[in-house]
Amino acid sequence: MGFDFGGLLRQADEYLRRHFKSKAVRQAEKRRSERQSAEAGRRLKRAALLGGTSGLGIVAVGLAVPLAGPALAGAAGAALLITAGSLARPSRRHGAKGDFSKVELEALPGDAEDWLLARREGLPLDCRPMLDRIFERLGDLQPHLGALPPNGTAAWEARRLLGDHLPGLILSYEALLPSVREADPEVAERLRAGLATLGDALDELCREVCRKPLTSFETHGRFLETRYKDQNLPSSRLE
Image (cartoon, rainbow, N blue to C red; front, side):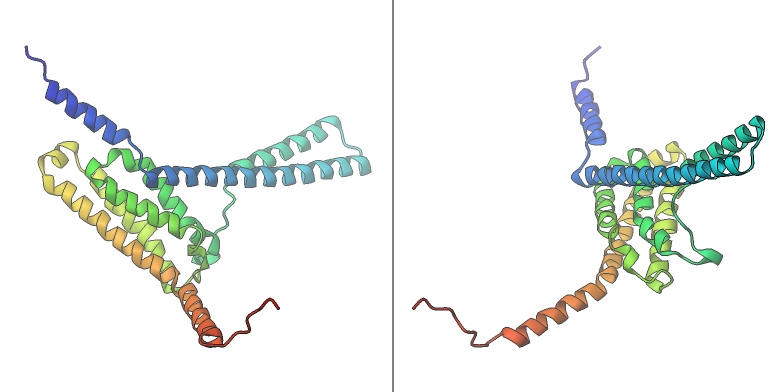
């Protein structure tokens, strides 16, 4: 039996390609870690506040109205349950009556990024460049998307793009049997084309987010040109 050196090289190449993390992915994972740390800090702060408030309330009531031991223990247990529940509950606030809150809008890119990172390994290797482009755009959007009016057209388009269209494409691909994916090369091609289209849509969303800041920047530049260009400014001379 001959030794398949070529096959071994192909397997090694595929292993390296699959486990190699591009700069875009490393930055996305770093942002995910920062979000997780920030969320844990918010929950701990909230739990400490609730626990301290509940404890002070029990002590105050106990001093004012002497309670039996079991009743006092029950109150303390309830306070502990409330504190533990606050640790498990996300700190994000949602809009009322179906409104799209600013907090939800700010969280959209990060939520999409977390979701996509969890599924990246299961997607074809040929999709990696398209995924890297999407990760880069999600990183660009995260500190700025919240500047849009929460119930404006652009905000709702961002919600459809990141909350519906992106996961919808990948979930529909994952729903296919592996044998069907392997037998039909057009399946992977359609996935790549869909991811490229989503990348184009994210480019447009980035431009929309920067529309007002760009206008302000251009206005400021024109003001400086009008104010200082071709002006004979006094120069300092050493006598």
